[in-house]
Amino acid sequence: MTLETLKQCRSASLARTAVKRRIAELRKDATGISGIRYDGDMPHTRGEPLSRQQRYVEALEQLSAEYEETTAAWAEKAAEVERAVRFLPPKLGELVRLRYIDGLKWEQVNERLYISPTTSKRLHHAALKKMGLE
Image 1 (tube, helix red, strand yellow):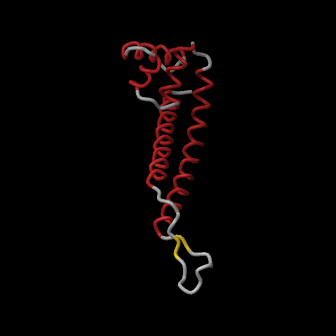
Image 2 (cartoon, rainbow, N blue to C red):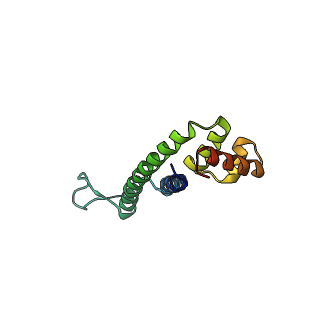
Image 3 (cartoon, rainbow, N blue to C red):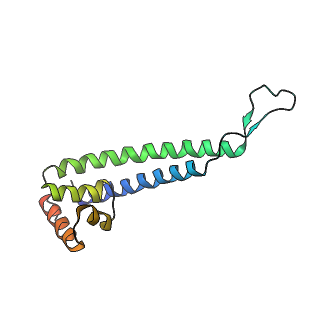
C-alpha cells in the first residue's frame, strides 16, 4: 500500500458522502406524487407524471447510480487500507480508519478519539511510519 492509496481512499469516501448528502437533499425537497395528468376524456386511464415528479425520479436514478459507482471505488480502496491497518496498534488503526476510510476531518477525528491536534499529528506520523509509508 502507498500513501497515494490512502489519499484515494479518502477522496472516494468524501465523494461517496457527497452523493449520499445530495440524495438526502433531493428526498427532503421532494413533493408527493399527487400530481398526475389525465386526458380529459378518460379519467380512469393511467396518467403520466407531471414534469416535477419526473425530474425527481430521473435525478434520483442518476444519483443512485453515481452512489453505487462511488461506493464500489471506495470499498476497493477501503479494503486495501483495512488490510494494512490490521497490523497497527488499536489507537493508530482507529485514527487511520477515521481519517482515510471514513473521510473525517482532523477536528472530527480528534473529537472521536479524545485527543489534541498535536497528539493526532504525532499518532498519524507513527501510523504512517509503521505502515512503511514514511
